[in-house]
Image (cartoon, rainbow, N blue to C red):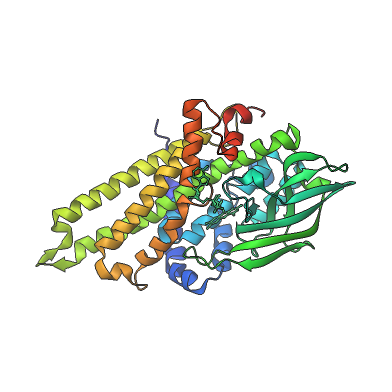
Length: 402
Ligand SMILES: Cc1cc2nc3c(=O)[nH]c(=O)nc-3n(C[C@H](O)[C@H](O)[C@H](O)COP(=O)(O)OP(=O)(O)OC[C@H]3O[C@@H](n4cnc5c(N)ncnc54)[C@H](O)[C@@H]3O)c2cc1C
C-alpha cells in the first residue's frame, strides 16, 4: 500500500528549503560551521520536534511526515536535513518512547528550542559490532559513573542532549548489559576531544567524545521494561526510525541532483542541440528517475510501518531494506548527475560536487549496507548469523521483550 502524503506539509517544507536553506547551502559546506541561523528558522517553522506528542509540546507528527520534510531539506542542504532527522527521530524518539515523564519534559524542551540530540554508540574498537563497546557505567549509590571514548558522534560539541550507550556494572561489579544514559553538554567529564576532518557533510561536526568520571544520576537513566540486558534491544529499535531518516536524506540529495541534471540537460548544447536530446542521456535520466521513485516508495512504506508487538518504531527489515536500496541508488544517481554536467560537475562552483561528497556517507553511518544485509538475511533464513551480534538484538524475536 502506498501511504498518503500530507501535500500541504510538503509544500511548506519545499518553500522553506528553497527560500531559507538553498541560498545558505554552499556557504555552510565551505565554512564547516554549524548553521545556527537555520536552526532558529527551523524552530520558528515548527520542523524541530514535530514528532514529539502534543502533550509534550510537539505536533505528534508521524515518521512519514518527518520523511517528507527531510526529503525537501536534503534537496537543498544535507546538513539541514540531518538536523531535521535528529530533531525528530533517533535519540529524541527513544526518550519519548522509553523515558520517564521528567526525561521527556527535559528532552522535549531542548529539542523544541532547536537542539539536535547526539546518539553515542560507536567506539574506536566497536563499530558494526556495537555490543563490543567498552564505555562503562559503574553504579555508585544513586548515580552512575561513566568512563570511555566514543567517536564519529554527529553533533559533537554542538548537541546538548546526549544519549550515551554504555555497559553497566552494579555496585558488586556485575555486568548488567548495555544501558542508555542521558547527559547534557557542559556536564563535568563530558568533553569533545577531536573533530573528524570529513569528506563531506561539512558544517555538521563529527567528533570524538571522552567521558571521564561523568556522573549521571539514576533519574537520567533510561529504564525500558526488561532491565538493561533486554533494554538495549528496545532502545536500539529507535535506530529503525533513524535509518529511514538517513535513507531519506540520501534520497533527497539524489532528488536535488536529478533536478539540477535535468535542467542542465535541457539547457546545455553540444553538436547544435540540447544534450538532453541524445538518447544516451535520456536513458540515464530515466534510470535515475526510476531508482529515485523506487527509493521513495520503499522509504515511505518503511516510515509508515511498525515493528512487531506494537513497536513505536518502523519495522526493522523494511527500514534496513529501504536504507540499503536508497543509499546505494542515491550514490549512483548523484554520480550520473555529475556525469551529465561534464567538467562543471567536478567544480565547486556547482552544487553537484558537494552533493557527491555528501551522499557517499549513507551506505556507512547508521549501519553499513553489509551489516544491514546481514540483518535482512538472518530474518529470511530464520537464523542468528554468528558474525553479527548487533543484528541479533535488532531481531523481532528479541525485540518481542517489549
Ligand atoms: C558521517 C558519520 C556519522 C556517524 N554518526 C554516528 C553517531 O552519531 N553516533 C554513533 O554512535 N555512530 C556514528 N557513526 C558511526 C557509524 O555508525 C559506524 O561508522 C558504522 O556503524 C560502521 O562502523 P565502523 O566505521 O567502525 O566500520 P567497521 O565496523 O569497522 O566496518 C568496516 C567494514 O567491514 C564491514 N563489516 C563489518 N562487519 C561485517 C559483517 N558482519 N559482515 C559483513 N561486513 C562487515 C562493514 O560493512 C565495512 O564495510 C557515524 C559514521 C559516519 C561516517
